[in-house]
Image 1 (spheres, helix red, strand yellow):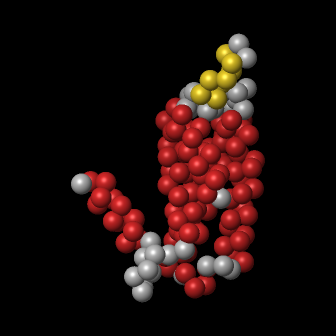
Image 2 (cartoon, rainbow, N blue to C red):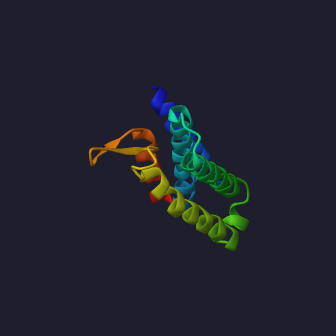
Length: 140
């Protein structure tokens, strides 16, 4: 019952004034936002070190969260001005750049952020960060 309530809430948010569902692009923005929230939550809750890789990962995840939030809000509030505009393209491009730069830091076993290597065998340290980072990258 609770999952149905959450699903209908998301569907109501995704409806435009005519009652039809918004574009797949809006769903990608919303997915990127949700996956960014989970990724940054997983990273912050599991991170104990404060080295350069961890700071870069935190910055990349934070920017992904902010940019995807801007994308969601812009689709909901300024759909005609934002949809298929240069601003949407710029925001999507910036997200792509940050994910292309941030994902290698997250997945590098030497950084011990989401993946580590024990005797040459890769091991997932933070499954939420690992999987939701890839999902967010797929949304971009």
